[in-house]
Structure formats: structure tokens, C-alpha cells
Length: 240
Length: 347
Image 1 (cartoon, chains in turn brown, green):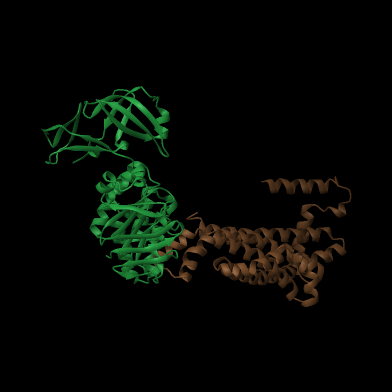
Image 2: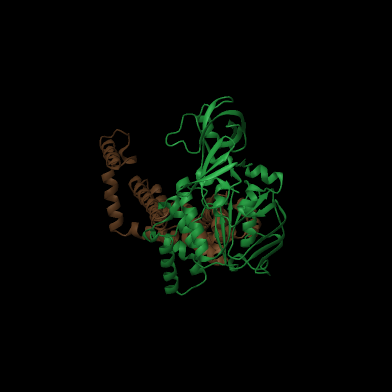
């Protein structure tokens, strides 16, 4: 309901010309018309697919790597002590801060946005996973040990399930962040994808196309976050 | 089931601890908080490193890891796995030992039945009451038929009634299974009810080991005496049977009714905690109820101790601080004492 009211006000304000310059503030219906047009001629689909593939590859690889290193750091104190200072130095660097360096190292090709998303996903997932594992009450580990479980068994059947809420927090936040980062990377360096479409629209002063791209971005951020929210609830709601 | 021996154990507060627990015995490790009780359990379970030696049936197990010591351990906070339902919690050890699925399922069913929790089998710990959690945790600890059972203040978080009920059940179960058990508590009543023998531990030292009567009525040193609180001991001049399993004994001016076990009674003893104090005359027959005047009030750590002059004798009673604060008691005030019939000991 609030969304419907917001869209109605948008439409009304644009149509009544309450904001000077119709050109710079198209009504919602005009944006939707352009959305349909871009979808029908395949431009939107092509660019969306490019962005989606990059996000899926970069996010999956970054999350899996973050998960593996996070588990090892959370479980083995000695590895945590060795890696923590390095991670602490690298984690605060914004993903886009790596862009100039990666442009020189990797060059401007498909690997660039994928690497940026990898970095964007890797550190937060690692951090949340390691924190989640370290925060599991040591008594659970002790109980499992007295019941005859090996270290690997304890990690797989006790520690990991109990760290899931933390792990999902990392995944959820970074799933949305991956989309924000890919758009920025494509805007700066890559000729295809939603970010590139945004930049082209800007140079042609096509506000309607820019808004279409922002709507796609918003929906994808939200969908990714909701997916992980759903998965978290599915896996942990019974016992939390 | 093995006997357990601790030889020159050192860890944290525990220094040079030597203790022997007999086969099939229930030994209560009794001591105040921070005395080293849980540390000793963790050492026996192999959950912490230590110096000294732990022997099961004369064989050292110091090099045996916790997962292979065959020890059932009921932790103080029970520590049920929150992400597993009751069945999976109980089956955890069986799966860890890779028991065939059918055998594991049958064992879980047997334990659900034994602990009377079959109706809870698919519930998660967050949906269980304190007593139910306690049963599940015990079933889990017993699933692998351990040689040794370690119970760390297992009834601590339960209400008085549930705790008393489960105490009886635990004791019965231990007898049936014949499992060598170490039961940690700081509650004197619990210790007395559960123990075959009691080991008093203070500041990491075993101060005394003996039967409940030996420990409570013949404390070896001042530390033990101070911890358990001195009992009221009254000499009896005369006793006569009232029939129906009751005996009337005269202790000076006091006439006390006690259960008649057929023996001659020369002295009776009663702990201060087993004497109730009432500001008003208690209802019911005047058996084991006496009127007296408070002669002193002393505040200890957990309790308030009152000396009451009654029938020419001074009896020591005690009550928790919160009860004392709810009453209007002062030195010189007349109060009524009620002696707990079943708690009176005879000699």
C-alpha cells in the first residue's frame, strides 16, 4: 500500500509538472513504458544477464572462499592469530577502492567486475563466519567430545549449524552489496551490464532509462537479500 | 563399571588432589562455588589437561582423549544442542560412534521410555521445561552406556519440587544401572540424600571423605564443620514407643517425636536448616513444635542463623536471607520452632 501511494504521488507530481522540467522527471507510467520497450527489444535482458552472471560467479566464489577461510580461522586459533592482522588491514578497504589497482593488474575484461564482487563478498562472509564459529559456546564442543565425536564431526554437526545465523548475516548483507558494487564497476570500466546501460542513458540524458536501471538494481538487491533471509529462516527457525 | 582413582591431581585451584571412587558408588563432591568441583569432573572426563594421574580400574587413562573415555557427562547447564530435536540429541553419541542405524534407533526408544519422555521425541530444546531438559540431557549422557557418569549440579536450575522428585529418580536410576557416579553439588540436603559417600572439597583440597553421617556429624576439621554447619545434638533421658512407628524421646524439657526404627535412642541430632521458625503458632497438632525466645541472630553468606532458647536448651535454626527479611524477627522475640520429623537423626 505505501508503495502504491508513493507511485501515485510520483505519477501525479510528474504529470502536473510540479517539478520544473518534465524531461528530468518522467512519470512512473512513462518509465514503465520504457521498461517494456527495453525488455521487448532485448536491451534490458542482455545487459541484465551480463550483470547477473558476473554477480553470481563473483558472489559464489567470494562467499565459498570466505566461508572456507572463515571456518578455518574460527576453528583453529593458530590460523586465526596468523591471518587476523592481515584480514583486519584489508577488510576496511571499500571494494571499489580496489578498482584502479585491478584495472592495471587484470585489465578491463570480464574478470574485473567478477574480481571486484569476489573481494566485496569474501571479506564480510569470512569475518561473519569466523565470528559465528568462535562465538559458539565451547560447552557444546565439550559435550560433543564426551559423546565421542571427532573434531570434524563436531565442526560439521554442532559448530557450523550453530554458527549459521552469523554466516547468513554475512551472506544476506553481501548479496545486496554485490549488486551495488557491480553497477559501480560497470559504470566505470565495463561496456556491458546494467551499470554500463546506466552510463549510456546518462550521456543521452534518458532519465526514464536511468530509472528503469535503478528499479532493476533495487529489485535484484532486495531479491538476493530476501533469498538468504528465506534460507536462514528455513534452516534455523525451528530451533532459534 | 570401573573404580576411579585420582592421584596427585593439579589444575587451577586443585592442588595435589587424591580421591578414590569405588565401583558402582555414587560419590557426591560437595563444596562451595569455586572450590574446584567442576575442574575435577573435567579432568576425569579428559576435557582439560592436568598433571597427576586418573585411573579407571587401576589403569591410567591420562592419554585417553575425552571422546574415548566412555564417560557420560551431565553439564551444569545441561547444554542440549539447540538445533537438534530430542531424538537427535539423544542419538548424537550413538551416531558419533557410528552405531548401526537400527540399533541406534532402538537404543533411543529405550532411553525415551526409561526417562519417560517419549512424547517429547520431536521437540526442540527451546520448547522443553527445565525438568524435561534435564531428562533429555541425562538420556543423552546414558545413551552410550558409559562406564562413568559425571553429574555437575544437574538440578541447580530446577524448582524445589521438581528437583526433589528428580533426585529420587536419579538415585534409583544410578542403583539400577550400577554405574560409578560422581555427583557435584553445593547443596547439603541434596548431598545427604544422594550420596553413598561424600567428599568435601574446599579451595581445591579434599577435606574429608566419608558417609553422609560421618561427614555431617563428625566433621574432620573446622573448614568442614563451618561449611556444613554444626548440627543441634540433644541428649535423651528417656524414650517410649507410641506405636504406629513413632517414638517419643525426652531431651530435658523437650519431648520430641521421631520415627521408631527399633533402636534405643541416646542422642538426637538435627541440622539448623531442618528447623522451621514461625512468628505465629503453627496450625495442627503440637508435635515437635516448641515456643522459645531468640537469643542471637547472625548473618552468614547464604543464610541467617538464629539461636533460640527453648525448654532450657539452645537450638540453632537457619533460614535464607529472603525469608528472614520477610519476617519481623529480633533478639528477645518469642517464636515457634517446628522440627522436621524425617530429618531428625538418632544415635
